[in-house]
Image 1 (tube, one colour):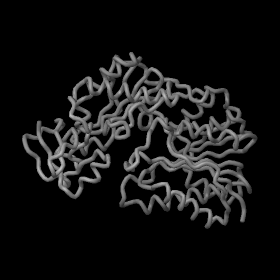
Image 2 (image 1 turned 135 degrees about the vertical axis):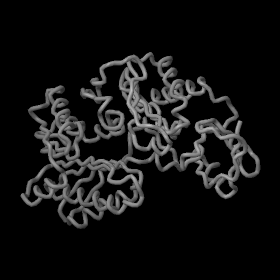
Image 3 (image 1 turned 30 degrees about the vertical axis):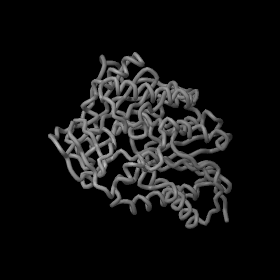
Image 4 (image 1 turned 180 degrees about the horizontal axis):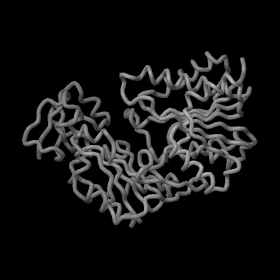
Amino acid sequence: MTKVTLKKKIAPRIANGHPWIFANEVNQVGGVVNPGDIVAVYYADEKFCGLGYINPKSQILVRLLTRKKEVIDDQFFHRRIAGAWAYRRKLGYTENCRLIFGEADEMPALIIDKFNDYFVLQTLALGMDVWKPAIVKALQDIFNPKGIYERNDVPVRELEGLPQQKAFLSDPFDTNIIITENGLKFHVDLENGQKTGYFLDQQDNRRAIQDIVKGADVLGAFTYTGTFEIHAAHYGAKSVLGIDISENAVAQANKNAALNNLQDVVKFETMNAFDVLKTWVKDKREYDVVMLDPPAFTKSRENIQKAITGYKEINLRGMRLLRNGGFLVTSSCTNLVPPELFLQIIEMAAKDARKKLRQVVFQTQSSDHPIVWGMDNTNYLKFLIVEVSDR
């Protein structure tokens, strides 16, 4: 097995649990390097560090899979997936969940989402892509699923020298399915929906709005397929309007409303949130609850200031659309905006809007997306509810 020896100065970061080893952190690679191969990693003092997969084409040269001297084979992946499933069941996630959350489940660059009896996976690095047959076999053995689909249509794969692709990894099936979440039903397009087809990371947060929306006029922006808005209608909102720039998302959101017999309470319209919220502030529209769930405004540190400006602006407008004592429900899904910065952005928006805030809830993604301390990429979602009142 090829041996990779680390530089001395970076050892503490790796020793403290981080699985990524960058090329400039390696002192020596001894032996033949075949991209995707399993290699043995050692510290500068020759102590064993772990086993991981290597790819010289990637900035992350090695991603560690284990800190033990064990065999990496099909059974290894079976054990890891079975262990991840046991963990989710302990937390109460039995129907829909993120089964594998990459580094948080010691499976770097692997995402597996479970939608009842269907599975969607992403292998985002060459070293994990090599083991795709073993991963699929493990899913079949453990779950006997109705279908497995590959959503590897993501640009990050190209950094690993991998093509973007979508494909069935089981016998073909209808990729338009219906799932149940919090007693509500939702259409999910596994083949063409965003990411893996549905955002499971907000499933617990959607329950958090149930008391504040009772009898309320609710506005939701960046609704995608309408999950927050449909929850609001289900929890007793008087009226709900959801807006999104995507015509396809709005069409599916209205289908979801009808699926739950809530079409008389919640409506979805195709609009650019940035434009219309600005206009509606001028028109002095008012709501009891405003919900904002925008996409990540940046995926690179170079554009972080633009993201901060975007988050501040949209939250400022949301606050100005609230009646005195109303509630702002707001999220950020980029890990480049840490929790402390996100709260500062909301505070800046409140200051400019001349509003006073009281925090109701501040939490992260649902627990099937576990956070590992020291791995910032596992702590990415910020979900906040605040009461907004006049100063």
